[in-house]
Length: 184
Image (cartoon, helix red, strand yellow):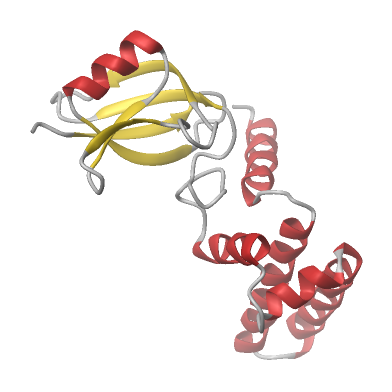
């Protein structure tokens, strides 16, 4: 069977959402239906993205690379592309872990404890960690600054999860600001 890697990209943001595989039948169905079809290597069958979750991918463009051995699938997603609930399968590992904890709420997890305490508690932790990072930057070693920065990023991610937001939304705002300030 001839499989091609299919790089799935959000047509609006340019964000890479996922990597999947297409055989000739998946490619044909995608072109004909306007929705993304793939070949599942683990299940050894065709599948339409979103057939069970409802999180479909409306295809705006399907393009081959210069060698004809890979595909770019530009889409309008109807929800998160990743089975984990993240906008992209390429979200940072820490974000995927926190998003998983927010969904599953495993006992004994500090993240679960914070989320259960509510958005207010998560917001206060972000404030505390920001102050600790500022103090470390002024009075402590580089190692401590990095440790405090890590604490701040972790608690920021938990706050976003508590609000039901995805880290991709923050990335979108930063990207837009960069383009505005650079004149692009």
